[in-house]
Length: 240
Image (cartoon, rainbow, N blue to C red; front, side):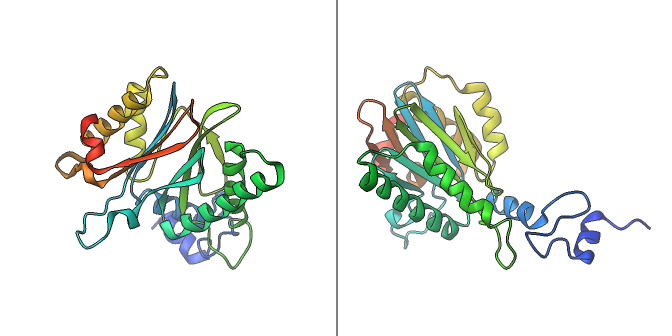
């Protein structure tokens, strides 16, 4: 009787360390971490003609939790915002490191940091934890958006430390389904208001009867001001 390949991997111990390749060329601990990301709450990012936008589902509906303490969108610098899906305590470590790097750049060069520099530093740190024994990979995918001298930028990094630039991107639960919808509905001529309506409409379609406007965090950076602005709660109702 043929033994399923997953059982073979477990029997041989290929899934016990992030540094051990399986015979098929997989790092199984890294692939397990990618599954963790897809269990996390969703975030959608868009590049719009007048700025960049991130909308995140907090997925917290406990009345005992203060909503602001469950914020899913973080300000790296005044012109850069970020969100994450997966193990959010892992994300906090990466976000804090990114903030330090952004401030060091301002102190050293008296200029705001480039958006790609932030995602590169995050991705480099994530890659290190796939290469050394005794530590597990970061179980989180990070999306970074901002505006610099190169214009509006949106990046996302995966578990392995790869990152790419996007016009529109989704991470977390239902990411593939959301990306299929974005491929159909996204338009480069959308402004931030139009992009917010699009994203909330996608979430409404995905979540169905579980959709509640109070569970979303929104942040955007406009091209003209290069300043991050956050919205949530009743301020979002007009975009439905």
